[in-house]
Image (tube, rainbow over all chains, first blue to last red; front, top):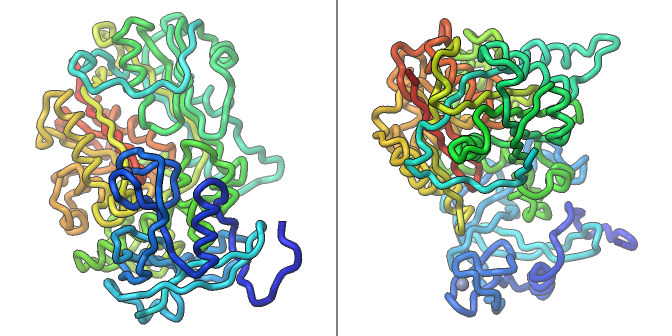
Amino acid sequence: MSQSTSPSREKRPDRALGAGHDDFWAWCGKGELRLQHCADCGKITWPVALACEYCGHTSFDWKRMSGRGKIVSWCSFERDYYAGLLPIPWMTILVELEEGPLFISNPVDITEQDIRFGMPVAVEFIACEDSAGGFSLPVFRAA
Amino acid sequence: MSDYKNAGMPPPSREFSRKAAIVGVGETDYYLDYKAERAKAPGYEPPTTEGLVLTAFERALAESGLERGDIDGLSTSFTYGGPEPEALAQMLGIKPRYSIQNGNIMAGPLPIACAAIAAGKCDTMVMVYSVASRAIGRQYGGSTYAGAAGAGAPSSYYYYLPWGWSSQAAHWALMFRYYQATYGATEADLGAVALQLRQNASINPNAVMQTPLTLQQYLDSRYIVRPLHLFDLCVVNDGAVCLIVRRADMARDLPHKPVLVAGWGEAKVKNDKMHTMVRERLRPIMQDAGGQALAMAGMDLAEIQHFEGYDASSIHLINQIEGFGFVEPGAGLKFCQEGNMAVGGKLPVNTSGGNLSGSYMHGWSQIVEVVRQLRHEAGPRQIAGIQASMSALVQTDQAHPIIFTRGE
Ligand SMILES: [Zn+2]
């Protein structure tokens, strides 16, 4: 559980942790967006899974993504689902990474007015905290 | 009493087609129960699963013309838990020789019951479904819901919690935003779906929401997950549904026309879930499962005269109209705006008001409406001369269509 709260960290709902997930977050902690790359068929599985979603193979390497992508959809939560933890409205985006996977994330400095379909974006990491402690969260800024 | 738990879907094979018929349907008082829950008069007690099930069962049995002693099968489906089959059988006063504890949503239970009847495990099965969502104070979304819902629940957003992702509604919101970008649709265009279903509900005295809705009211309503408004999302209400399913050759000479279960299909998203959901709006699995159901029924899509889709959201009903091939991708909202989804239109859809305005019974109330339409007993909302309907339970990763025909 978390010790003291650092004011510079954003509080977030809890991550999924455990096998595979821990590796993903550890790479994020190093400022690298890496996803599971199947050692057999070469495809990328996201979100984290125990087996390749295409061929079922269970050994992966963690392939580094360029961090570049484009926005393919977005939505804003106008209702408080997290008991005041996050400000409302809360915007989430769906980014198509250059390597293909679709990645749910948050925009940085992109408003409902600015955002547009196909907008190029690039990853960055922000300091966050959940009940398991501090972590780095990949988010996207207009590129 | 033999017992069958967590059964898988039987294959959509011709040998099961039209071997079982629905001969009785019962529903609880969705409208009155919802009103009472909202009013919370002094002494109000939320309904229990048992009480709701008993009401639906008594109604289905009464209209079926059968006696308790005719019932030899039982299927139970509960969204938030309910009695074990033995205890329920005792409560209902029946002695089934075969029982199934089925999944809660209408994605499997009816085909499983039909296959059991075809296999001779029983001749007449009572299927009960109940949800008492308001009684436990549930809302859609948030981490508590994802955590409490457990396996098999729509927990696909669970992984995205650290990005503040929540709620099933967000899936539909992402789909509609993509639809807007692809086809140039506006929020007012989407509003046509909520308006149509409210119009359908307005001639169904048991619909939860019957007051007519204007486009301006729709546009002025609050967003839940932008770009979706309040009226783009299903109602949440308590209730129960009972279906009595009987061997087709024993289903004649009863008070109502039997409604035959002619075909079904099942397809799931295996990979590229987000892509399939947002960019293809699940069309590949609907094409697959819809094709299976039509082949099993020995029918063409053009023979389907009525569709009861799973309108968890307005846009998702359009996904199904397009995905099963009733109209081309991108043509669904115009189809709705032109009145084609109304009774009297080219393809009447969700004629009792659907999940948006009628009742949210996880796909079960759609089956009841199919039965009423195919019996030609739907009153002011009857589709003239109808012979075949399709229902579908389509979630973010699976499609379960069923085809029904009017029996002799
Ligand atoms: Zn693979």
